Image (tube, rainbow, N blue to C red; front, top):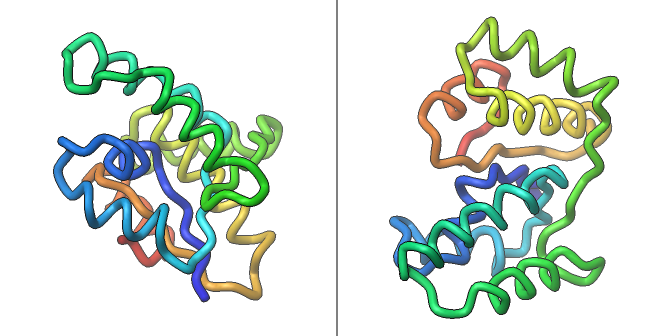
Length: 146
């Protein structure tokens, strides 16, 4: 079994049917056997993405999609939101921004994944993203990127 750390870019694809690679992301993150982790920040980012999709008339039921995401993040759901530990994560994210020229939120997600990879040292962890720069940085940090 591999633990998947999913960046919001991949999570959004799993929920929004008109996104590229929707079926792949849905199968991997929502219907797969591997546990999925993401930062609690993904909930805020997801809400922003859903709101933007609603404004662009890409979706019809904004609240239903938000409720579904929240349900999927409950203890019996396919996604586990992990608590952001700023004292540990932000210094690591700072270094990632400088070393890999990542955007702030992308560096934070990668730093959260790095923290949990250490805590789950006895398990394999893959990083799931649709952002090319973040994927390159994750590969440089030794992640299997999907």
